[in-house]
Image 1: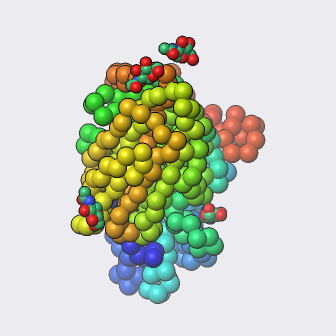
Image 2 (image 1 turned 45 degrees about the vertical axis):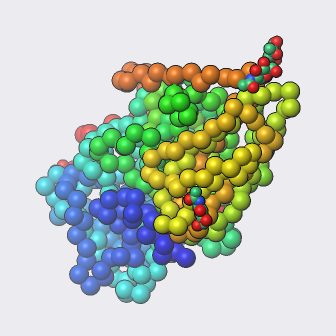
Length: 390
Ligand SMILES: *[C@@H]1O[C@H](CO)[C@@H](O)[C@H](O)[C@H]1NC(C)=O
Ligand SMILES: *[C@@H]1O[C@H](CO)[C@@H](O)[C@H](O)[C@H]1NC(C)=O
Ligand SMILES: *[C@@H]1O[C@H](CO)[C@@H](O)[C@H](O)[C@H]1NC(C)=O
Ligand SMILES: *[C@@H]1O[C@H](CO)[C@@H](O)[C@H](O)[C@H]1NC(C)=O
Ligand SMILES: *[C@@H]1O[C@H](CO)[C@@H](O)[C@H](O)[C@H]1NC(C)=O
């Protein structure tokens, strides 16, 4: 079951960006083919630490770090925010190990290699998803990559699951989520699997004050945000099936991960008969040839998910929204759903996304356990982000 999941990560990231440890050749060593300068990050949450300590990254200007140290190279203890290992311009880096091919072949961790542009962007951050952490993205343009290499097999839940909850965003800001790793060039329009403001069927966008808890089962995904957002991320699975929504005007996400069986999922709307309104979905995904996705309730709508959003909506609300994937065990599907309950038909408003950057950014803040840590961390991160340029 592990193998297809690792493949899926490969498919969405450039092969130069994600290097699976199991693919390294222990005899020859592996030179990283990216042109320096760039940064290396390591995610290997459930690999044996004694094995990770026997794998080194070496550069031609004599920097050496083992992968255990790199995977725990946090900006601060108790947060998942990783420090980059910088490969300097005109140097090269390679991986070497004393492990056997068999030991190496069982590792599930990976290296994430940035581009030069990402290295020099101080609004580009990389997290390893671990225990619950509050992430506050400043009011500026940020790209935040989340890595999840949790292959813990103690539960029957999908591998590499991250839950996102306690979302808080103010109107006028914008957040888009994409699968895989960011590239230097802009994403295709409407290729995000979730956004707020959300895409509406008439080509307009609508901001939702509430975002329901959701779960992603992905090795890598990223946020592009402007004007700030905050949420809690943790390395656990949350099943959205049969969940009631928490607000009358709200949006959320259902993801069917690759290798996970097809199933019928219901989202309960808490519909008040006295109110009418609108319910809708935006679907993206990548599925095998005979697969499709359908809204089964309140009325049937069928489509074949692609890498660009397909939208469906009706001007009514039922007590339940039924979502179903067909023949898509070897595929993955993302469904952003939304509901707008009111006493009249609500015309989606166009949200203007203002380009450009604000000058008030103070660096990202994250919280784990105590407030004392938050205070410290906020000032600490500025030093680190600044230090990348020295
Ligand atoms: C190379 O990178 C290391 C680590 O970031 C840094 O300490 C060192 O000054 C760099 N060397 C050059 C020549 O830039
Ligand atoms: C991996 O995920 C499981 C299930 O959510 C969690 O209990 C465990 O703590 C995680 N392990 C690591 C090392 O992050
Ligand atoms: C959806 O998939 C099922 C099973 O392959 C197929 O019978 C059905 O015709 C498909 N529907 C559409 C609209 O493609
Ligand atoms: C719609 O609801 C609001 C607030 O509940 C109420 O003030 C208003 O009178 C209602 N309008 C109609 C047409 O029912
Ligand atoms: C919603 O309900 C109100 C009050 O009953 C009605 O005036 C309006 O036409 C309804 N809108 C739609 C889209 O059904």
